[in-house]
Every structure is written in structure tokens, then in C-alpha cells.
Length: 95
Image 1 (cartoon, one colour):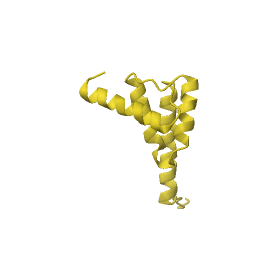
Image 2 (cartoon, helix red, strand yellow):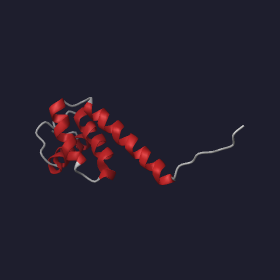
Image 3 (cartoon, helix red, strand yellow):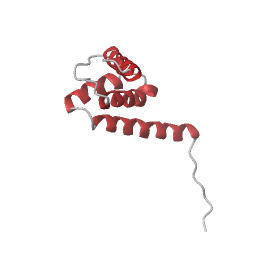
């Protein structure tokens, strides 16, 4: 019997986990947006800090599922404004 054990550096393991999370969040968002809108949003999000991309995808998906429209976004500021509006409406029940 062979007693060899393979281990990976913790940083490598963490990077793999982050990449899988990013891919999962990106895929979830892709399922709820029209292809053109998804591509526009994807380009904006992918231009942001890599450590925050999965969170952006997740929050955008939450807002889309809550009825928000991202079809005209052109910047991360546009995305932030739509998401802020979504949070206010969800919190206070206003339109």
C-alpha cells in the first residue's frame, strides 16, 4: 500500500474556492438576464476588483429577481444606483 498524501497550499485551495464561487454566481445571474444585458453587466463587473465580483453578481441577481431592470446600465455606478433603489423599496415597501 502507498502512504503518499497530496496536499495543496492553503492559498491555492482558497483561490480554487473563490473561482468556483465566482463561476456559480455568474451562472446564476446569466439564467435571469437577457443575453445582451448579461454581457453588458458582465463586462462592468469583470472590470471591478476580483475579490468583489461574486458579491456583485449575487446582489445583481437578487435585485433582478426582485423586479429591477439592469438593461440600460453602463457603469458600476448605474448598478449601485439600481441596487440601492431595490434595497430601499424592499426595506420600506415603497415604489
